[in-house]
Amino acid sequence: MLEQVCCKQNTEIFQVILSLYPDIMEPASSNFSGYCVCFLFLQVITSTSEKLMVTVPMGHLVARVGGQAALSCQLFPPRNAEHMEVRWFRGDNSTLVHLYRGGHEVNGEAAPEYVNRTEFVKEAMGEGKVTLRIHNVSISDDGLYWCSFKDANFSDTARLNLSVAALGWETQISVQVLINDGLLVQCDSGGWFPQPQMEWRDSRGEVVPHSSKSYSQDGARQFHMKMTLLLRNLSDRIMCYVCNPLTGEEKRTSIILAECVPRCLPRCLPRCLDMLNSMCAQFLLCIICSATLLIVYVPFRTRVSISDPFFSLYNSWMKDIVIVALF
Image (cartoon, rainbow, N blue to C red; front, side):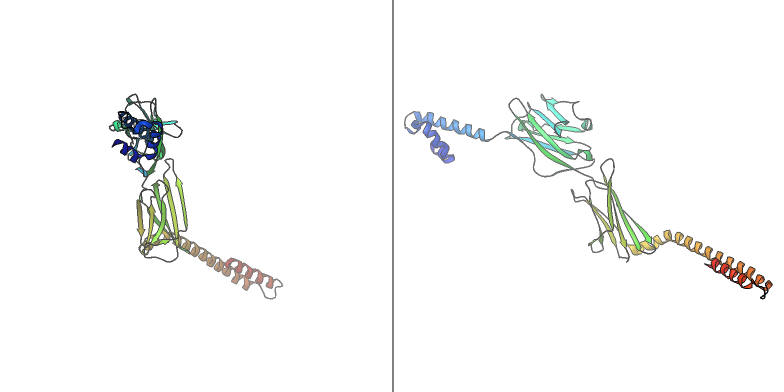
């Protein structure tokens, strides 16, 4: 019976065994030793095919700024890892995140930015699984991490990527009334990571092409977005839409321009009044100058005789002065 099972599992292997041990088919007591050889050989083949390695969970790992990230890795096939050295690091092993060695955690060797922020979960080490928790996640934690298992006879490493997401602050819309060109609508939003998607949408949810778009990053690598839209015709409603590409979280702020314009006009009114006042002052100044010149010109003309040879010159000179003053 055992001979039939061996042949069904791997015919080619069994044929090799038969060539090495031709007496395995003899019905004598040597059958038992042949069966044992077959069984042991298959055990060696099976154990060899199951090569020990380090694995990490499939899928995209995303953590929020200020939240917690759980980085897990495991030996496969499962094996007790309590006697092994487990190391978490970044880059070319130059930035140590956490170290487990000799059955306990080694403090004082991790990079300064990870001190007192990591937690090593080892409850499942008997099955070869470990988890590193990073608390108070920041944007600087974004990137590749390496998990390493090592002992006297084994060493392997696996990597996984941690993506950090930050949901921005509330968006703000401001409207500026342009005297000749219409309305300039501007949307501002900050505190995002990675760079968010930003667009204008109308009351039907359709995308409205923006006039300009710009961004900047602060010292904490947070993105600050600015987008403008020039409108010559008032729409019923305009919406500023900002979305985080990692989490799909979004922020929307809308404004009804027909209601906003009356509120914006008072801001523009003082400037318009100043312009009008300046124009009126200049106009009044011209009138005063012209009246003054006329007052001077009329008596002067009555005093000068027509027979005076310089009468035409005086007359032309006074007219030129009046024209220049009016201009």
